[in-house]
Image 1 (cartoon, rainbow, N blue to C red):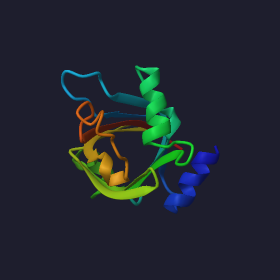
Image 2: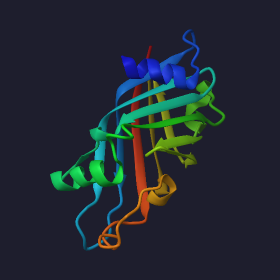
Image 3: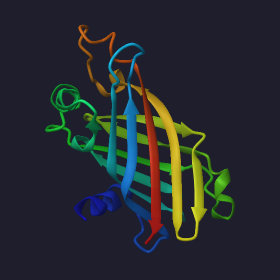
Length: 177
């Protein structure tokens, strides 16, 4: 509940507005390189909210919530790269461009600011798929970023095993509140 209140404060959401919420959003990131071990993590407990009156969208993920297939890789990610004890949250605050609830399938771009590892970067998520069915809105999309944008240094010894480009995929199923 504390994180939902934080999202409301971060975004300035009008509590009387038409809003949709999830606490089980899904984010995946992958920085794999062919011929090397997969560098991929998933977080299935992301909180996200949409205000359909304004098109505002916000998401919050606890960094320690990202799970890797390899426990050692997860440990290195949290301690050496993400420094999740110092930077425990990743947040996104943005807008669904030209949100039209009458024809929501035409809303296919989200712009905003992604904050991770103490740094923020403006991003645009193109070709987003947004669907509404009854009291539910689904949002699916992906974008690319690079570790250097968030001051994450990849040691030379492993730099050929981790892609410079990081593919981030989002999948949210939000219910009307």
